[in-house]
Image (cartoon, rainbow, N blue to C red):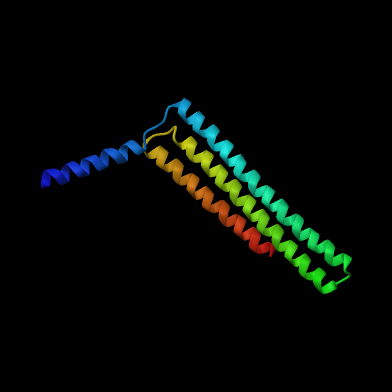
Length: 141
């Protein structure tokens, strides 16, 4: 029983140690290129969604202006401002996540604690960028 437990602990230790093994430069380069492509696609989609939502909000403002309805115009203008803030937030988060994907792939070139530290920095940068985006969004509303 003790031998079985010892073997399990050793196997877990080997598995964990293998997770922090450096990838080859070619493999890292390929993974970084893939992450950049995925990231650019994600950011482009967020930008397109934001533009589409903003166009809808601006149409509502224009319709209210055409109707000469000041109450509706004020509501539409407020909605447009909120739509812009939400769109900016979504784009900022998509960009932060894109940067995170690329950064974590670059960390794969490192090994051991350097890799772990690199990934922790990438995670911290992602969290900070998301918080900054939230502050900008909430300040704009």
